Image (cartoon, rainbow, N blue to C red; front, top):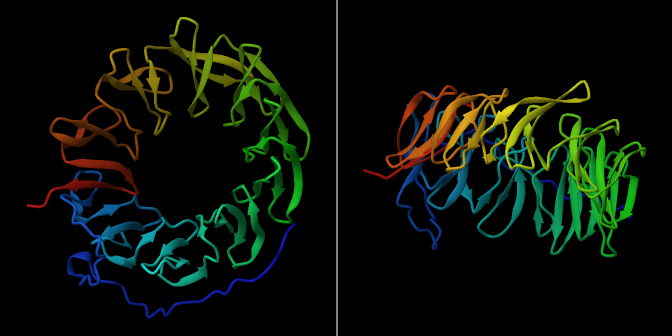
Length: 384
């Protein structure tokens, strides 16, 4: 059942003021439970220069020019210059998605603000999830519903689970039935006594009586039943049937492989594990499996910026390219995704960064560091 009502939307006063830099902010009313950290967070640029001095208790990555930060136990947000654009007044603040973030006051009130710190929408229930497009999931105690960006409740909180993207939503009811609905008109697309997963590339998978099936959002059956299966990526997925592993195409065609396990690697590539426990890298080309070379790895990260982390049998990490060739030798204790041409590394002397060819660009010198986003990476240092 669908119920429509309007939630009061209140705009805060917007005087156009930009908050001063955090170093000069007079932070009052520090929470009683606040404990000063031993080290603080700041940001460096891709050459390792300090772009924003370490002064924050916690930080999140930059997205669309804004990074959410915590200073003296209170949450706000800064721009790339380190200037406070959202004053640190909140007990909690999510990252901005579609220009909205959920703010929680120290009095326990929750509402959505925009990047100008204007109050846009109240959160009318116990909790609200970040917006995905025009919609967000709302929670009333143990039940879930759906609200749009005008504050209208599209579905009352009455479901045990509710997952939504910009176009579709999945509801799970108390009786064990799951439903797929199209958000624009709340049309019921499919219902089953089992589990449904959100569509990817126009196809969704669902389980019924321990079997996995695939179906197009138009209602056309694609393939199944299978013993197991994953979501589509780049028009393909892996499924298991009668002990064999297949590549399943969006058309429903199945390509048998000699793999005992398939792991999606990104960039339309797959890690294929064989009977002898060795791995090869494969891709799908013209509806056929094309080997990309044998790789001596026992564990992987997905491809990012054309590189994937590869751990050898001794536990050392290196990086391979999309042809399966070793680009950076297995000499690292850990591996992170390549981001913006930089690879984070760590050692006994701290954190640093390599370029995509393995050259140390930023020496290992930071107590802790994170990946680059929008040309800046967070780093942590102890005060002098």
